[in-house]
Length: 164
Image 1 (cartoon, rainbow, N blue to C red):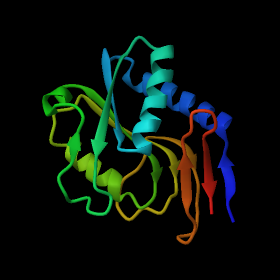
Image 2 (image 1 turned 90 degrees about the vertical axis):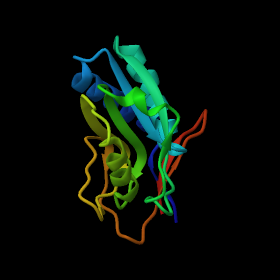
Image 3 (image 1 turned 45 degrees about the vertical axis):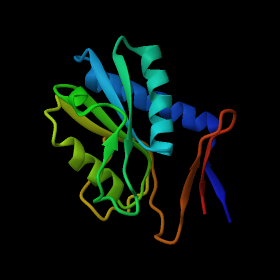
């Protein structure tokens, strides 16, 4: 049985709040890279980028991060050349923080670069971490059982998050 835990309006509100938090953190920078983990993480990063561009003078650069979620030790690639990350502020973004596997391997990848600031953001944090990784910015923190599933659906007219 599915329960909608966030509707389109609530997602928009949380996205805007995260954008303000990112601006507060990176206000002393000229540019910030929003690195969204492929698929929903990148969609969420794009939504944050729109809000951030509306509220701040920061130059927002979007980057898609390709991580094999079944084999996170496999090579990670990005839509930007690696020299783009040097001496920049970066936020690694995903839709849901389940066990922390995807996020920790994403963090590991970006630690190879000399970043000015490095933060993480998720729409939903499930609080079932297998690894010592945390989201600096989160839309919703939710304690769920291991049997429950969070699904984020981003649609043009109606986005939502379900718990089943």
